Length: 315
Image (cartoon, rainbow, N blue to C red; front, top):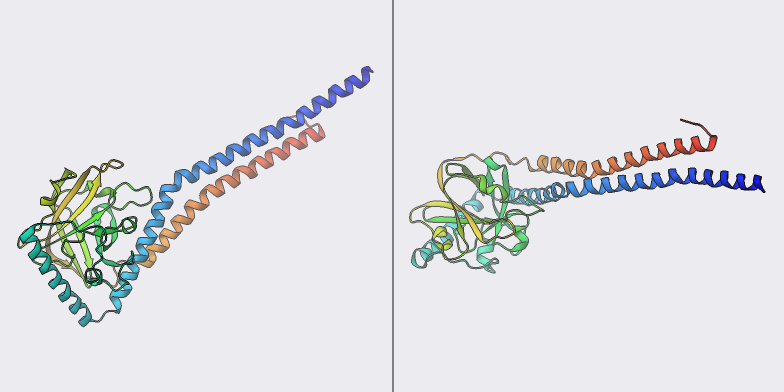
């Protein structure tokens, strides 16, 4: 009886010794799983920003491809159509001031200007906004619909189209602080004197920021968006502060010369997209590799423990 009791005690002790590594292994597996999940969460902003960059790059590549298919005569005809449209906008603004006409124009003429894509498509790009100081390179689309502003800057309907010329002020709007894309987040870093560029058709226009103002949403906005007589300007417009959006940052810039020469798509957009895809792949692979390495390491340690218990090997 005593022998049976001793055997039973030894068996319980042995089972307990075997259970300890199992519990420890489960805990370690949970730790590595949580670490992998934490790495994914930590990298989500980078992943979303990269996906947005890829979408922007493809939109701009489509714009560049369409532009290269246009003949010199077609480009000049398009410029003339835009000049006529901008002259009408200038006349209206001089008489009535600037008025915001809504996020989606619903105007076939407007959406057909500076566009070679299907009207109404959110990839209907009219120009490219380029700000070297903050490394911003964004497509500019027709209107300011929410779908468009998730990945691009929008042209405010009712303002001049961004072709430049006397009596023009193209208003370009963008979101700030999105978790899925950078967009106009760094606009607040710009100061008077900084350069802004607009790539449109076969031209690259240069603008110098004149002033930067932050105003409450309301009656103070329209005067700051109004066209100035005989001026060739653009206005950058975004909401602030992030999450509240009850104020507006408004930057006015004037045209400077000479224009830049358009190189064979100075945009090396395909190369840029390949770099973005590599960055995205790295973001996805790193947490997986880290988690896998941890699980494999844990498994090796676990096997060593089991071997020590099985063969009675002491440390």
